[in-house]
Length: 215
Image 1 (cartoon, rainbow, N blue to C red):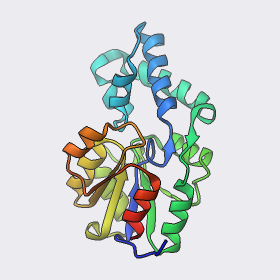
Image 2 (cartoon, rainbow, N blue to C red; image 1 turned 90 degrees about the vertical axis):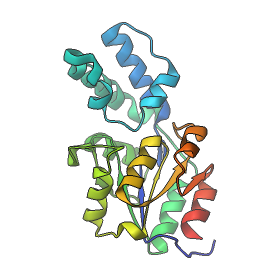
Image 3 (tube, helix red, strand yellow; image 1 turned 135 degrees about the vertical axis):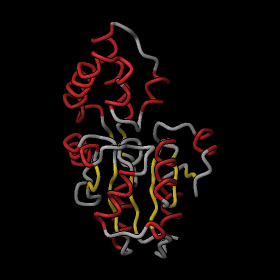
Image 4 (cartoon, helix red, strand yellow; image 1 turned 30 degrees about the vertical axis):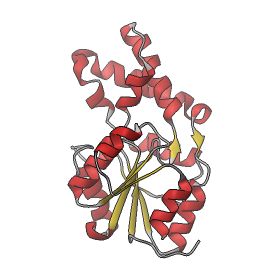
């Protein structure tokens, strides 16, 4: 593929974008609901939560919030390497971006320790540095704070940057941060809802994403 990058900086979401953590996350939500609340959680509802922080998701449960968060994290970390899988072509795409001179980074709603574990399990630690995690900002997606924080750390210009993610909140945060937005459909997000946000592009495969990023 000819390399003529459209953007100088490519910032990626993690879950459902770089790493296939969808089954891990759904199982973690369902386990937590069952253990703490004694309730079953529909897969569709769990998918809709992906992209937000755990504290935000569990805020409606008031005094049980921290118990729910702790239960989720315990299960998630204990099962990460077992349930997380890789997206074919992602490592090669990141390598091609770096070879083309594109500055690559990750901005996620995941806690730093968990995000580092996911990147390591996917073999992406050296290809996509973790720039912004949940721990780094007080406000989170769909607020633009995480993306702005990441761009500042990378010394990047929003006008020549793009954010790639699989959730509606990813597109919303990127728009608010003044960067281009590419929604991917291989994660948790529903293509119809992603399209309604009118991102710069919606891509259905890693190859299609590569064509958008590398020209």
